[in-house]
Length: 572
DNA sequence: GTGCACACTTAGAATAGAAACT
DNA sequence: AGTTTCTATTCTAAGTGTGCAC
Image (tube, rainbow, N blue to C red; front, side, top):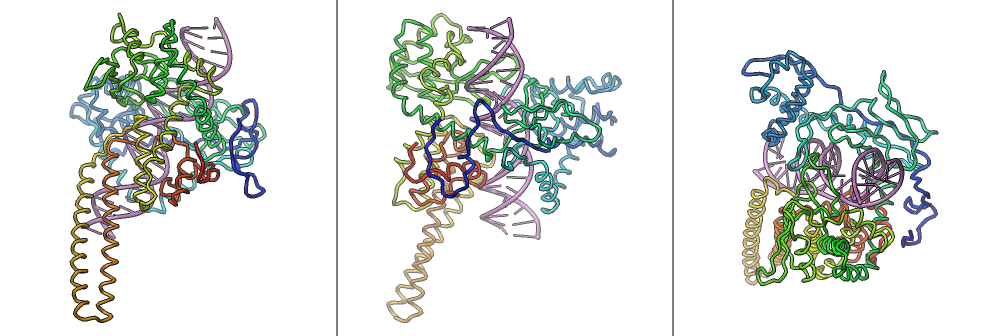
């Protein structure tokens, strides 16, 4: 793939300019220390008791450990849910001795409160640990296990700690919530590294499941998780060469789409008229993916996960058709749970042909039937591949997100504004994308209160402003009477103060607006995954906004390639 | 086409750490 | 200095998409 770039500054190649390997080879040399395992279980002190049916009961270590997982979640809503409790209890019983099993037959009779209190106290104690103590411990492990050598570079590893055992927390209505996520041991672990590297050592007295040398993949460590049976990986940090290049490539593909999106749109509009049902469905689905930035919607195994859908897996029950609604024609109402069981609700007017097609697709179907019964993501992606090299459904999300940011920035940035107002504009552009992609968050628990506090601050600032203005007035009056240096100085000082306070007030007001508009919207996901960072870098350069106002340290590391590459006239 | 294994990106919540306030 | 509040980081679940066997 051709990627536009500036000529390099020095002799040394930047990492993202080094040559890339061919035929799927991801690296030539890989050396690392392996994973950090979860600390072993520490039995509770004997004074911390578990009660069954009001009576203290000493549990076997295995049963006790699983009980602590539940105790640690006692304050969480999960533990009130039937499915969670049922799954937990079933898995807990598997860890019990036969005696325990015969005695403990009802979860309602279990009292974990002492355990729960104990863990709360522990976490308080941990908080009270001095900075140095915490830092030293974490830092040592980070230095030892947090990095690897991939080819010529020392790279940061993302998740070098193995997930500790606990109770599975699925999102939404997950049928497996509460199941026991078992402890991962060395014999579960597959190590991936290069043959000529120094292999990681398993803990004394243990063995790895396997050591392999597959340089067509990027992971360092893998294991199979017991809830869904899926594979988990340890991979590199987003700042690494291998992740950065992939990210860059993703945006280049989206820019390719920009070049041919008009043709593709014309094509799918044509296909709305096709004689073939399959093609019509494909064309309508693609229209939704393009217009509404819906996800592809792979099919999922029923009963294994929460019931969520994307575009291709939409069911009849997820949309409602209104030939006419609130003065608009051909309105489609979407209401379904998407990824992470986040609700997607939207009412959109569509073209007549789309509307008619939808009516056709829904004819003689039950609510739980697939809307696009002749379509799936594989068919759709095969078609997209023919339209453009590397094109898949998700590229539309990347493309539409990035192009929206660019357009919005162009439209709403005001050169006259001061820096905070410009940043507000940036956040608003970012927000437009987050809304498009339906990136939501639970409103922070303290949102109302924090809003009130901010408003109080604003009121106080206003009060201060009028007070200072009064002082300025009287100083001016004084100056008229006694024209001495001291009075002049005072007037100047007050003028400055008024100006300063006005600026502070303005900043607070901007902050309030920004926060209010952000109540239920998460900006981070689009910023991190959908917006070509070069657009943001160019915007910062063009308007003289420091890049760290837009990206924090971690984000600057992730987007180092873009910060280096883009100048102020970069066009997505 | 269908089902499955695999590898990788994308996602919001939880937690830790930093900053602001009292 | 202690407490509260905001921000950054960590965690890991939940998606997407490919390739292969049948």
